[in-house]
Every structure is written in C-alpha cells, then in structure tokens.
Amino acid sequence: MPRAVLTDIEGTLGPVAFVREVLFAYAAAAMPGFVRDHAGDPQVAALLAEAARLGGVPESDLDQVTRCLLDWIAADAKVPPLKALQGLIWEDGYLGGHFRAPVYPDALERLRAWQGAGAAVYVYSSGSIRAQELYFAHTVDGDLRPLFSGYFDTTSGPKQERDSYRRIAAVIGTLPQDLIFLSDLTPELDAAAAAGLHTAWLVRPGDTTADEAQLRLSPHPVVRSFAEIAWPVEPGQGLPLDAS
Image (tube, rainbow, N blue to C red; front, side):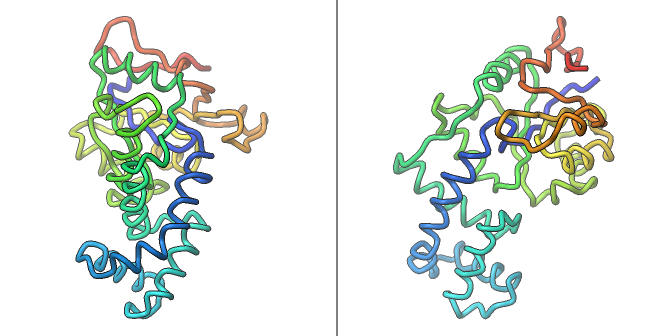
C-alpha cells in the first residue's frame, strides 16, 4: 500500500495546453533577447555552454546556440540546459504577472485533503525544479507550495527510465513500493512500475489521445480525476485507488 505520492504536472495536475501554448510560447518569444542580454551572466553562460556542447555548435556563436534552444522548444526536448533557461525566463513572466498557472480543481481538492491527513506529496517533472516551484508559487489559486514536500526534475534521471524512480525513492528515504506515481504518460508509468512503484494513469479529456481499447488493456489503474484516488479512513494506512 503506497504511503506517499509522486506526481507529474503537465496533464496530471494542470492542463497540457497551459504548458504548450503559454509557457513554451513565452519562452520561445523571449529566448533570443534573454540569451543576448544575459550571455555574460555566469549562470546563463554555463547553461549556454552546455547547450552548445549538446547541440554540437560553437559556444561562441550565440545565434546558433539560440537556434538549438528554439528547435528544442519546438520539439519539447527534455534537455537540461534548455529546461533551466526556460525556468529563468518563466520566472520573469510569473513575477511580471504575465500569466498564472492553472491547477485542476479535483487535484487541488485532493492535494489539500492529503496534506490534512499528513501525506507527503512530491513532484517529478521534466521542467527544472525552479520552474516547478514557480508554477506552484503563482497559480490561479494562490501559492500552493506548502502542499508539496519536495521536487524532482531530470537531474534525477529521465522520466522514462526505471532507475530514476529508484533514485527518487532513495532521496525521499522510502522503499519504491511505498510510493505511488501519477502521470498522464504510460512510458513514464511503465518505468515507475518497473522500479516497483504503484502507478495511476490520469486520463483527462483533451489531454490524452488514448482510445478505449488502450485504456481497457492498460496495466496501470486508469483514473479520470484525483477524486478516484481515495485517502483511507485512517491516516497513515496508505493511498488505495478507488478505480478498477
């Protein structure tokens, strides 16, 4: 029986459209100017150097480095220096009041219930830890950071690799079988299950392309909202799934 929660963000806690149509678009529009204006900052310079190395372009050619970053944004590539740079750009956007992050009402209700029952909830996203903190600090429902016990990103490993989940469990200080991982993507769930975690597949209208046959054959419990993930009668007993 799982005793703590590890959850994805995009398509799980909040809509995919916000990330793709708002955050990605904002970062793409701001990236050229951000690179030009901050290339001399030590933190940004180190990230640009790593992006140049991964992109196979000269570090001194900022135009080529920028083009790599924009291509990665368009492809939704999970490249660590890109994610870190996006986080810095999004920080400007959040602090400037250009957008607020949406959270599904059913997810917010259950997160608050879990907190009240003493559950530990952790986030694991391909976005940088800083980007995750910004997301939950600036939601349409206010600052939700107190609902979470910690954050993990791809510095713990890719989300589709089994060992990433084992590393996260070790950092949390729990056995993999004491965690349940929530996501809208089955390759991530497959990796988590291979590591020994419990899983639940969040299937939300507009955020999934799965058909009914795929849902019926899924090895992961399928839930359509956080309301189908029930907290037990007695706190500390685990997080059983209501869904069949």
